[in-house]
Image (cartoon, rainbow, N blue to C red; front, side, top):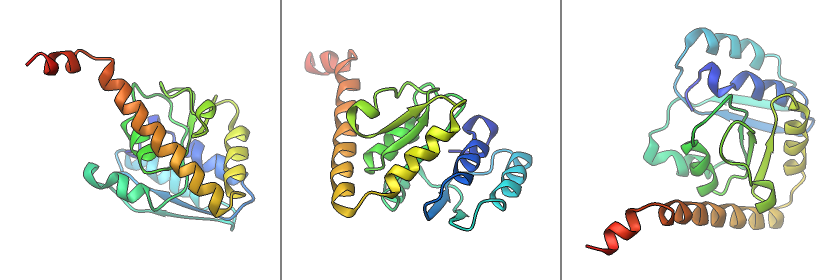
Length: 171
């Protein structure tokens, strides 16, 4: 996502300040608002030594899923999304998502593919990261499978619930 206040990178940084596990935090996205990025960089420098971070800049949309496959979890405490294409991309890559409740993606936990929390409960986000940090490889393999299947099922449901299928079937 672009680096802008709405995407709430500052909250992600605050969340990571309370994580005790060793974390590699990779930030992808173009700098949309330089002042906000400068503020974020100040906060990033305050992260504890167990959290290493890097900004890798913009990713072309056709490369997004492949880039996300290199990571374990997608943290996105956004202030609001109508859909959140980057969430679908993360799920397609097999990344469980830890999201704010300001997206339409509300059923992650019941499908074992992530968590959704209110922004006034940042400690819950940190707890979810800690939980994922404790997973072993076989647990990750299972999580990846659930997450990718959820992404497929979600995409199929979106197509089924439109008039496109009926329109194409009538041709």
